[in-house]
Image (tube, rainbow over all chains, first blue to last red; front, side, top):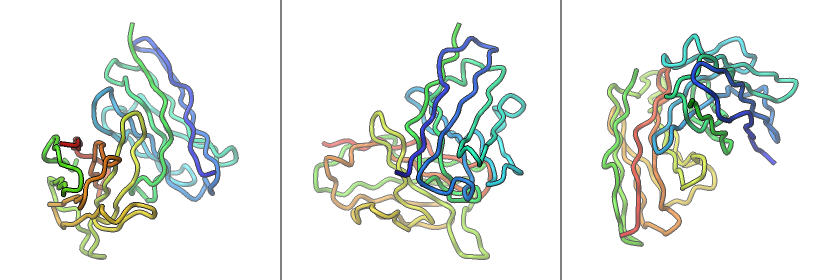
Length: 119
Length: 113
């Protein structure tokens, strides 16, 4: 089955860190750009980071630059998001999404993992 | 950054009637070299991730019912549901992929009248 499954979300204090993972299956992971898209509670969608097929190019939205790092392990069919210096405004459901890119539209989404930043 | 503005924020339509959602970009998303508009539409049902409906402004994703159609070019786009069904209750988002960062509209909530 073609799917993406996120994990690693949870409750973290402001200033803390969290690492999200996304396990891909059912397709050739190494052939696709991949992205992390987040959705704050009751709000819209925001693409926070994306990564080239071989990991050589990465892009970040300004609000997370210097704090978040996207990476991938094609041998493990996995995508990651290391989140440091977390703020309350980073509270959101984080979706892993397959990008029919480069830097294109998203044709496959995971179910998401909730990150809550609160003291 | 390209700002995507959707209207209306919400609309209520009777079953079987037409629903029309608008999306406007702050700059053109038409790439002149290939004459393609870098615009996609998604549907998000409550408690679920978004699903791709339309890309290149008017190309339906495989498996999407033909009551969904996309139109427009440049800066102004429309998603039309020709005959609203109960299962179409959702929030709809447009997204530009003309230039990074990839940006979404604020969403339009479609309900049954």
